[in-house]
Image 1: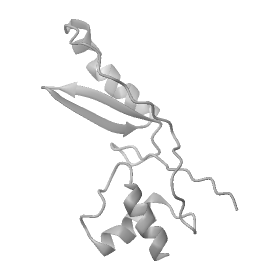
Image 2 (image 1 turned 90 degrees about the vertical axis):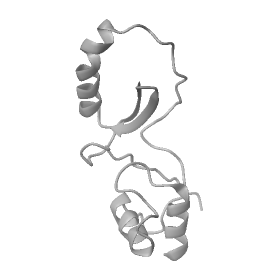
Image 3 (image 1 turned 90 degrees about the horizontal axis):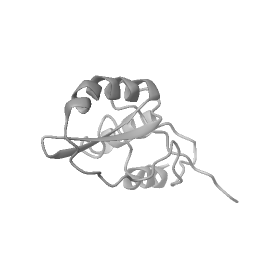
Image 4 (image 1 turned 120 degrees about the vertical axis):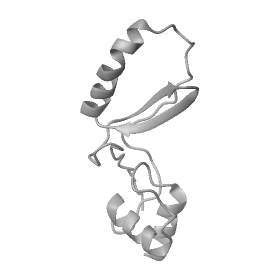
Amino acid sequence: MATIAKVLLIDDLDGSEADETVSFALDGNMYEMELSKANATKLREALWPFKQKARAGGQVPRRKTSKHHATSQTPSGATAAEIRAWAKGVDPNMVTDRGQIPLRVIEAYNAAH
């Protein structure tokens, strides 16, 4: 039997469905976050005045991301919230409240269900 699995990205700002991973650097540190199109636009608009006056510091290599990634699928088609709740019941440090759920956590959920 063939299985197609999708990972739903969750917006790190408001918990809605995310459309992309946004990367940026500040004070020598790189940051990434999953954001909806609307929140990504807000971030870019907020940074625009500073970007216009800044010197170019070189390009950071980009990684390709998409809305859906192939991975293990839960037998019941569980949501990210259900997987997080289960993981926190097993070990509160197993998963964070936001962002992509690690594959090892999804695999552990699959094994338990």
